[in-house]
Image 1 (tube, rainbow, N blue to C red):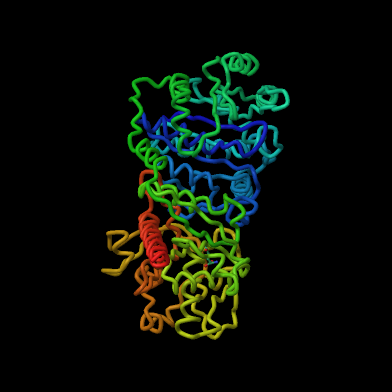
Image 2 (image 1 turned 90 degrees about the vertical axis):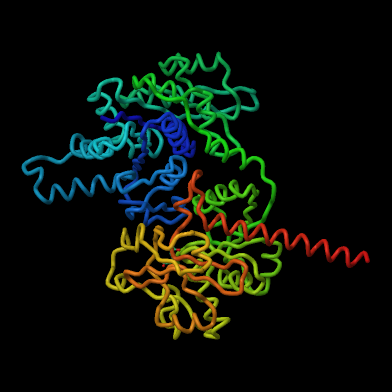
Length: 549
Ligand code: GLN
């Protein structure tokens, strides 16, 4: 039987519950326990797939095709194990299940109510992974902030689980903020006291208080928080701002968060933490030997969370190459053939990001052209790959109106077209090509060199694809389809001959990059960018020598 840890948040949103949950999970895993993390979100969308990145940041996709909250990306990156459909549940999903059951007649004769029907369904889903026998500990992160109307049924479900389970099988960690008032030069505990009181009024008493703070908590303050929040002083954990999220597990280890949790859950005989891989990653991350500039060309660049997994994949790949990756955000809407040189000059590599819709498309195409012609390492993901195909069609094959039918349904060269099975689909939610699909790599291709394998599996989230009607023209002109999904005959990877590094992928490799397994395309792309940086440095040196001579 698994044990359950619930992580709630108080005072304000954006405190980093996901990172704290993932860090605790990492520490427990490092001591030999089998741990997974799940997130329960209080909004009414059935999943975040229909939300735009400005609302919700990136939509993370699991192997089994769930469109999920971006925190699941953190869980995978920290724990190095995949999550699934069961790891992310929303209010919408809960209500959908209960209402469907009501229509089937499962509650015949009864009034269907929040308590017990909605709370029962929440509890069933909260326990689901615990019943699988695969895990010792299930950590459940509750989205939202304590006191929100919409999170009430989730808190009530936690209360009931706490009441039903033996005391040592369940605990609640409450993450809160200790603000610093610079005028008074003081850390303030009152908001924390209030949020714990609010949680208690809803029937849940937290066992551990994790305090986000910009300044260290002294003993006196810890005692005060402990007294007012009714926990022992060792259950007050300081969570200071860290220079990287990957340092948080070590900070939590110092604070003994894992020990407190293990004690409360009566887990004995745990091993010493095995974090050698983690530490070696951090060490490399902190001591880079080279520095490069990568342009991230997208239309949501002002919002860091929109490209979360891509940014983290660069951190993983940068560390393994001992290279500091400076990401230069370039808004695709602001790019035009007239300003392209000045905007893209000095980059050692360019990544054209995924996306939907027409906004910023011409800027992305102009960026691909610049990378192709100037031999700058290029990496296109999903929409980025589609833009590479369109650019090649327009500027190499000479089909000036070539486009994707997503943006122009009347083009005479629809080089990117809707997948056959997508044509009949009307509903928007959960209907893309989602999740992991196999792909076969062409022997001797760049992709084959990168993956060192003939078949791979990568995660997808798209409706459009490379149009095979034009494949022979592309091949003759030098754009190579180097990865194919054999079952459906879909082009998943394209690359260019006679270019130092040019690859476009229809899938999302960033979703599978973890601290312990940086994604090979990111790793090789950065190597190509490092070579570009070295070459540029030598050319600059040679030129200045010539000038002085
Ligand atoms: N809009 C494109 C499609 O649906 C690309 C999607 C993406 O970049 N994730 O095919």
